[in-house]
Length: 104
Length: 386
Picture 1 (cartoon, each protein chain N blue to C red):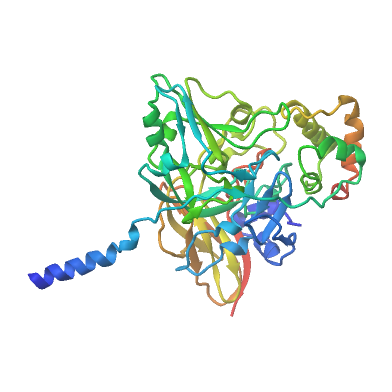
Picture 2 (picture 1 turned 180 degrees about the vertical axis):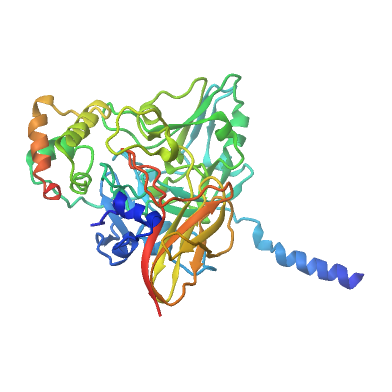
């Protein structure tokens, strides 16, 4: 009986190692510096209107989009995200987007 | 450059004529972008965008034998911020989490206050709503993620409901809204997400201060991050500093306009469709991924979505017959589960699929929606076994 209890205890101990109690996680203040952007856009009208809110890779990595899809993106940036893009520039912006290397 | 698998190619699995160039094989040839070590506390990441940071985990960072840890190292864990004004410095003594809105008493909690509460640990996959968007056909705009906008971690924190109970949720509360230390540019809408009260009060919804046993990297949401196991990452608000209990559903941009999926089955519509009914994205669905497929090993990781991985099956005859893969140790309902397949000798195109504990599984034909969300079609790989 005693041996059995001991065996049971050993088994339990094996299943529930002391390490089960999670260790306390220490929180310490953090500061980071982000890397400098390297990608550039080939047209000034894109740098001025698009790169204020995000770096150029976002545009340069897009799949080939139709003019109306690019227009929808510009409209979304102006409407939903309140980007200061003058509607009068839309045609020039779309033309510059369609001329990007990733859009060929 | 990641090539897409078009609809016809993927459909061919079900039709019996298998894809000629499997996606994974293309990815494996390291045709993708060079990896970057330039971001603090990160290494070997695929750079999708410098500002606001979008960093993808290369698929081989998930690879391992069945018995290996299924957790993604913090320094390889994917990063996704919406706006460029993100917290670059957080003072742990000064930080406060505010709990307010429809509550009996507002709270302003220090990190010490939070760490003094009972803590819980939960293993859970954090997957971006747009994971695999770059593989959609026809292609859709947005971050062109491959399969690496996901990661699995052991999260340590306190139950959200313990915080809400301390504040006392007022009668008539409908939702709980969350936002963090990041700020929108100009008049853009602040990033905030809301959960229905029942999901917020669920016992596995936690406010985490630990990720794989240590504090979170700033890029992953230090000092606090909301963890909603089984649901897409859009709800896992980073650098969480504000919790608001709402009496009516949140009508903000990030719930009403963004991160919405078709209400149709599998969140799929005919490519090019517009003006279909939508719902906010929510729970995840099963997926299996290859992390390696060569003469020595065919293996990967699986996730069950909002239910555990029940089984992972592989097929080398275009889905006519399926065979059980071996599974690694179970780390809980919401964790990655490792899988491995032992294939007969020969040249194969191997397909792999997960079935979760609710019986949900994966299908060969890919879904399509304009946001590039909810992809979970069956992945294939070309392999020669000697």
